[in-house]
Amino acid sequence: MGDIKAQIKAFRIGEKIRALRQQKRLTLQELSELTTLSKPLLSQIENQQVIPPLATLLKIAKGLKIDIHFFFEDEGNRQKYVLTRREDVREDEKVPRPVTNDVTRPYTYHSLAQGLRHKHMEPFLVEFDKREWDDALFFKHEGDEEFIFVTDGELDFHYNNEVLRMRAGDSIYYDSSQLHGWVAVGEGKARAVAVMYTKE
Image (cartoon, rainbow, N blue to C red):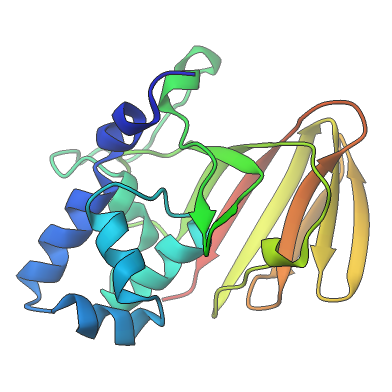
């Protein structure tokens, strides 16, 4: 896997957040209050020192009143579809192991609709690492729904007090405002297609 800083810079997520925050004339403190995320964390994200997980990006998107796809789109792109070929899913374009509250998330993700604007769904190819479950891996985001289809390996999907074992070919659609998280189990890593739907 290539240099993490270079991968983050390619997405320019931090730069986009800062530019939009400044355009809306919001201070970091005001954005913190709108997102319930700490001011130091937001500063680290803007300065590309921290890789935000999808749940954190959703909170920032809602605080800034934008769709999550804003972070993955090319502003000049007006196309009506995105075709992602197998060879387009390159290791050096995946967003690696997000960190939230000093907990490294056990997955990397790659946007499968990068560049397409004004959409309510955001599909990702996600690769999950094998590790022991820790309740610190739980997260949630209000008002959204998610769909996961496991393509390879096995996952334990933790949802509130339940643990569901998922194998290749299994899928789940769920309310992501509830506590949830995943870890790969069995032999090696697991892969899945995840689709996030934002109602707003």
